[in-house]
Length: 125
Image 1 (cartoon, rainbow, N blue to C red):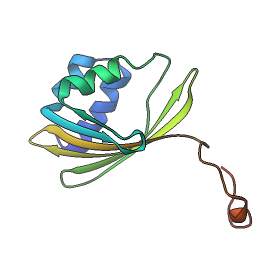
Image 2: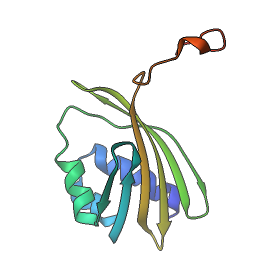
Image 3: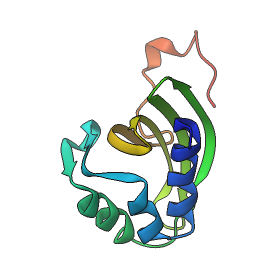
Image 4: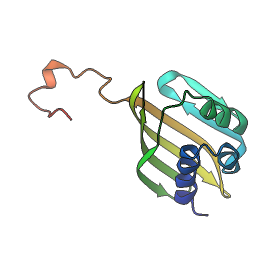
């Protein structure tokens, strides 16, 4: 399976809550970093469990997936019934049909304040 399809499958299996299937896409020694919260997840089992145990009420909407060789970038929106809408930019490395590492930047839409000095140059979205 090509790298972009593997990352699409990652998100599809998460949405389906197919945790065993998610694990099949990941290397045993997977490392995923979440710089915004200063966390590193080491190992396939930990990554699967942290996602499986996340409080329910969420959905996955893939906005785009692009790749350059084994490096795949995905932009995903994750609306949650009680926590608002999150957006995540994820950078994955896929090698030999498995995701071997990732770096994900999670944010809540509109969470960062817009400084007043920029108001003349921007449009609110």
